[in-house]
Amino acid sequence: MKAFEVKGQYRISPREWQPFAIEIASLDEKAALEKSFALIGSRHKVKRKFVKIEGVKSLKLEEVTDHAVKYLLEAKK
Image (cartoon, rainbow, N blue to C red):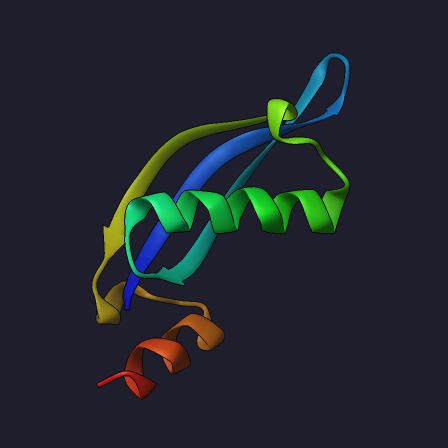
């Protein structure tokens, strides 16, 4: 497992976009993107077409701030 940070925006009204950054534990970038779409959609009831991904960055274990992600990374060693 690797840690990824996904940054982007999702639409909250026709003229407003809310920025977000999520840390995700995943096998690769493609799976991290899918997980981020699923999380934003389930938390905020936003369809995929209203989510704009600006970038995906791989993180080292020291850079991870989310405790759940850090736990998953350390458990797989």
